[in-house]
Length: 113
Image (cartoon, rainbow, N blue to C red; front, side, top):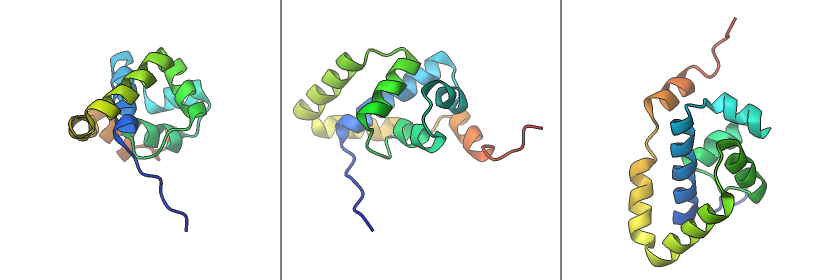
């Protein structure tokens, strides 16, 4: 089995920003999935910061959520380089799922019919 890539503070920061923007827009995971064309599991893991985000997924998520990809990436890189411990702690605090995310996770396999 392959090694799982390490998730660092830059990934956690980006995931937290993507999650926050999704919440601000009131979009469901399924709406983001439909807009990006990414697999639902990819969207969920990227927004939770539980997997490294490929550049393609990052750009698709930023576009779907109306985020300027360049400045967010610059900000994450700068924060990771200058404040890795503080950023990791902040990312850990924001990694808790929202009530909506918990509800969607509990009902993701419900038949809508």
